[in-house]
Structures are given as C-alpha cells and as structure tokens.
Length: 272
Image (cartoon, rainbow, N blue to C red; front, side):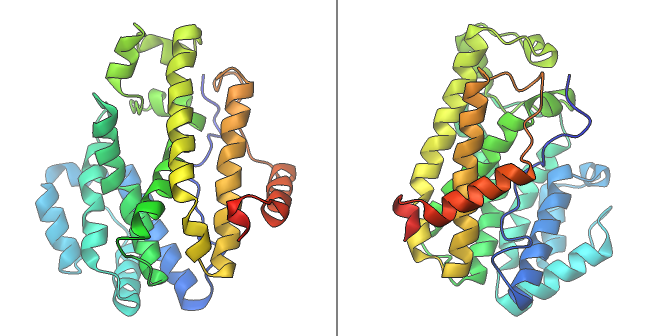
C-alpha cells in the first residue's frame, strides 16, 4: 500500500535554486502552472482542449484555477519573452490527467511527456535564451528522465489514483495483471518491466548530459545535483529489487548532502 507521504509528483529543479531575481520568480510561476495542469482541475472536463488553449493564448482566467496562478504566469511569460503556446500545449496532457490514465505503448507515453513536462522544460530554457534546436532535445531528455524516475518512486501512489504510467503492452509481454501493481506483488516478471523503465530513464539522462556544458555555472550546479540524484535514486530502486511498495523512497538531508558533494567533486562529463 502507498505511504501517505508520497514522493513529489516531479522533482522541481530551479524552483528555489539556480535562477535568481526575476528569472527565479518566472521559474516558480511556470512550475506553479505545471502543478495545476498536472492535477487537471475537475472543471476542465466540461471544456474542450482547444477552448482551454484559447483562454491561455488570450491571457484569460481558467476555470478552477486560482487567478493568482494565471496572472503570474501571463506576467512572467510576457516579461521573459516565453510564448504562451508553450503553456497552452501542456493542456493536452492535463485534460488526460483527469481520466484514469493508461498508455498502450511507450510511444504514447512519450507523447504525453512531450505535451506536459517537456513543455515546462522548454519554458525554463527560454529563461536562459537556450530554447533552440540544439539544446532543447537535451532539456527534453532531462525532463523525461525526471518524470520516469518520479513515476517509479510514486508507482504505488499513482496506481491507487488510477494512473498507470507503465505501458500496457509491456505488462502484456510478461503476462502481468494490473492487480499486482495495486497489491505490490513483486515477482520476476514485474522486476523485468520495472528494470526496463530504469534503463529508459538512464538513457534519457545520458541524452541530457551534454546540456551541462552549455549551462551558466549557477544553473549548472543545480542541474548536476538533479542529474546525479536521478542516478542515485535509480540505483536505490535496483538495490531493492524494484520493491517500491514496502518502504517508499525518500531523499533525506544526508542523501542531499552526499549528492551535493558528488556534484562538486565528480570527474564525469558533468564536471565541466
């Protein structure tokens, strides 16, 4: 059974660290907007995605969204030169979040990530004037990596809410019935499926790694901590034999200190 204190929906680099001044305020506004869309307010189900998108593009209030959230979003998007369409695109995945989520294939899950967390990454890259065709693919890969790692950490919590981020065809390949995920019955077949997700997450981190060399030093430090922290969490999941049910993974103060030291003294490509 999931713990009452579930891990965060998605790690939030740059919410409090990395940026400063008006850029930090903008980053927080963009994260706050993502947090709202990630939960898909109930009132949105009465509207089409296109209707909601039009409200964003016209800088108008949205149903069941605090006005302070949209006002801050529009203000910072304007002052920082971030196109509103970046935020409007997130609504495609947000409306789906109101349903019992299922994905037939990984490609379908990847499209969902592209419409959601990758658009947030794109908005943050705009703050750095790095939203170009060379750097965005690395930023998108980093966003997908953090999303997948979070889904592994929150697997018991997500399935209890009717959200299954493991593609159904992956479960079918190993004859895994969904009830095993609700009950936390970890067998060898389920370990194989979860192992494949950790491989995908590691691959995304590898694709994201070149971004570090292009980031300003202050931003790079935050990036390195989350990059190394992601690897650390994946290793912990594997050491547990993929049992994320019996004891939820928490990142405590000692873990953060260890990761911070690793980010400072690591001799990997991230050390640039």
